[in-house]
Length: 361
Image 1 (cartoon, rainbow, N blue to C red):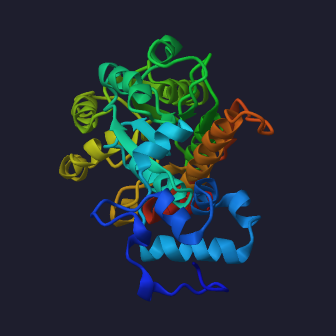
Image 2: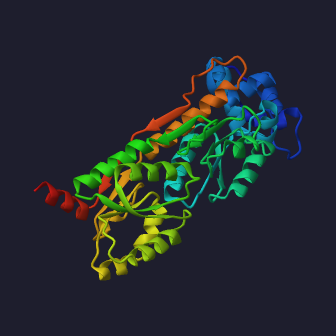
Image 3: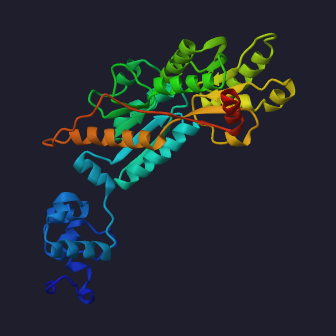
């Protein structure tokens, strides 16, 4: 018999007369201890609106017993019962500084919502990506945020069932969605305008594979707005930047005002050749369609496109949660936009600022 009020006298507790073994406590144990039903205990421990609508003394009594018994929910059983694992996958190239920072922000947002984030490093490899996608449903993953390795919707559609909740990050693929991305056209236009303000017209362009959507869009925008006097395309690797710069320095008589990298990883590789930049006496502007956190330490003029990573992370989380909520029968369906674009900004170091001041004077 439970005492009156919210307090429970634990001095007479001996397993509530049914559990003398060392098995972990269950919902039934808590229900018997509090003289409530298993469903009531389940609703209280699940939290949310249903728990908030219950009598405060009942809710407090259940939570007190659960804490006293050191109750830990059986996540596997809960997943089977609810058909939800509360696990989300992030499929992208984890070696990318940008995506690793976005992943950190996404992880924090999902953690606050009691979701686990599973990292799947595609490494820009379609075979690895396909394997991860095939196993999402098999492993009971509720949904995924994907940075696709290519622009072919069939790669994703073939490996995922219809209606599976996915959000594309940064790379739009026609026929899939929704997509959360930076406004790449606006960012590239802003970069071109800033270069022109510094007197740069002719550029050497280093870009990634045309099959990668954002690389294709950024390169296309550069070619449309600037005079591209030399172009190099290669994998999204540091050695691409190193190799491109070595080849560029062999182009005798080639006149260019800036080197434009559409991927930060190319710029990182290029800057590893910094001694040759200094010794050659040629110090063109380095423009990067991505952020370069350490650029203020370097003597060469650098200008970067800066993306709002917090907005991108929040956009991905909010969009995927809306898709998951829309799967619940009877739920009010939330409108999910097919594409959510976030504007970019520009950042530059002191050496580039000096060029702007010189050009203005």
